[in-house]
Length: 504
Ligand SMILES: C[S@@+](CC[C@H](N)C(=O)[O-])C[C@H]1O[C@@H](n2cnc3c(N)ncnc32)[C@H](O)[C@@H]1O
Image 1 (cartoon, rainbow, N blue to C red):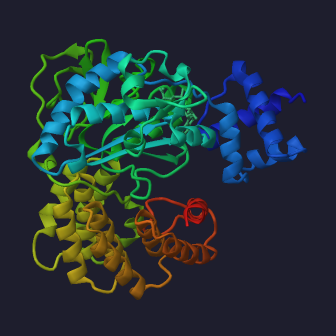
Image 2 (tube, rainbow, N blue to C red; image 1 turned 30 degrees about the horizontal axis):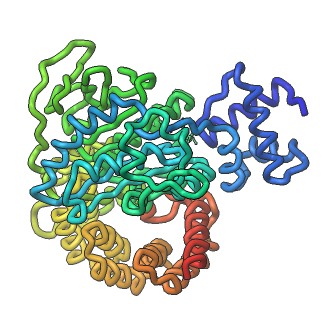
Image 3 (cartoon, protein in one colour; image 1 turned 45 degrees about the vertical axis):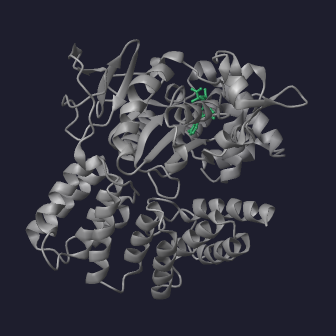
């Protein structure tokens, strides 16, 4: 079928909007091929109706997933870009691990746009080599992609020789077992270190607690920004900035580095590569760096020893977006506090968590402080990895206002991050006692049951959440959800139910 130029132009815009992918005119043939293949796979005979729905943004998420799988490139392999991995191994991870060893023993790393998983597993392998007492650590390696086919392959952890095309020789011998078909199966202890999930960088909400994309120490997002429209890439980078803890690192492919796009970050130069670092100071300020060289406006500064600021050496984090807090503004504040609160929210939205904490601390340290300020402060601390402080704020907020379910939910998310599972569950139950229709409470209880392998219980909680979700328009952002819509949560829950049923 031939599509008119005008139709292809519109299609390009629709795909850019839903997937963030950019298809300039010279790639229109790829676009047409991809859409036709997706329509075939979906069993859609009338491609014009499919196009119509795409243009009207009324396609369902599974259709978008199939479309994505026909429009994206999954080129990847183990230890891709040797230099990046050398820098991670020698310069970035050792000081990070040292700084956490004496304290919280937690790390969170995100391979964003992971394709079939080689990148995330390479990082997991590196961590096992760098942390001999790994069992005593709380390590989260999350890996996300838009293409469900890639994600399925990734979670199977079985690879052909092609995935090892640039890998060091010891990799296969030490971490894989060859199966009867001659393929290489990753050893279970590495496989279980990585959690794969679907996430559309252009459309989905992050950072969120639900997707574990908050309070990350390192985000590796290579060879995807180049396919995104510039405005989408900028937005993605902004959200990565919010997802990182202060001092956290962002790694992109060499061809994706840019002074303009990453202006919020400190640029740190290592031999042959630039890394980006979230500084707790204003963008452009030259702060503590790793062994690399901080670059400002094209000038170079001598390297100095990497040290985490003391406030980062405590516990880690949970992220809640400020969207839910916005309507709570001003009614109950003194005018000057309302302004300070607004400024703190803006800083929070910028991902400038230390500055937001400073602002809030100015007026929330006394007795009887408003619960909104306290709950924002709890979120700010949580995003900084300061879980002890976050928990204390949530307790103070509850002591001040015992009847607001969202405060119990907030406390539960912090307890969950602290691995205090039983207390998290009872806090969620308190939230549901106050409001049995609190969807996220049911969802979170389902997740707790799922993690504990109590699949029947999980299913019961998920079913409750689904029933409640029917009341919401699909596009409505759920209260306390960090920007997740009712439709998206329903999809997440359905796949969690399917997973529970398979494992029951
Ligand atoms: C070339 S691979 C990169 C794999 C790996 N990061 C690497 O560098 O080896 C690009 C990946 O980006 C994913 N991708 C494209 N658009 C995306 C989006 N909007 N959200 C999430 N992933 C996306 C594709 O599905 C594909 O797996």
